[in-house]
Image 1 (cartoon, rainbow, N blue to C red):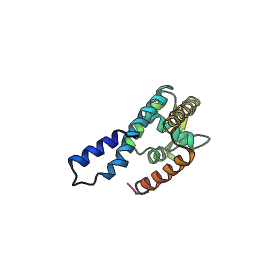
Image 2: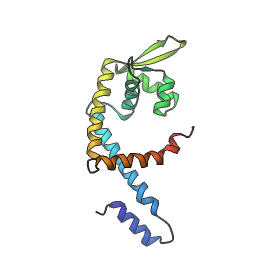
Image 3: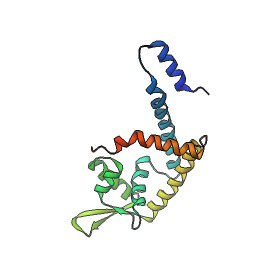
Image 4: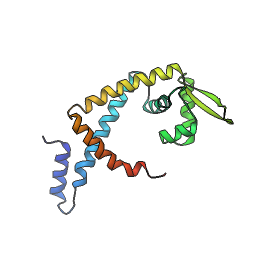
Amino acid sequence: MEDEVDRLVAAWRRERPDLDVEPLEVLSRVSRLARHLDRARRIAFSEVGLEPWEFDVLTALRRAGAPYQLSPGALLTQTLVTSGTMTNRIDRLAKKNLVERLPDPSDRRGVLVRLTAEGRDKADRSLAGLLYQERAILAELSRQQRSELAGLLRQLTGPFDNTPG
């Protein structure tokens, strides 16, 4: 079965036979898949009234386990945004009653961000919707193929995920 990337690669091989365009066969597909995944994420999150960045913060808190709270610094680490951006995000989520700020008992100057009951509900519902969308994307692959692909992608992304900064 030929896809758009096959056509793109064939055109480049015809037009630029001097270049090795083999990386396009993998990475163009990854890029196209990322766009489809982004679309699926937006659908899943819009069903519960969330933006993708809201999902990222709420689910970071949800994964922390009871009492579903983290320091802003821990949220920065998990969501890969600047401190100014995180402050803005926490403010906006607090206005929607999805998170609350609490004093950090171990640091008089610090705060903790805690998921509210409504925030927990939205995190749980949006995750269920996302998993439904993602299962549909992966439906053409067997369990073995999904496992193999996950391993290959882990090998490919590992050096990026384990590099400081």
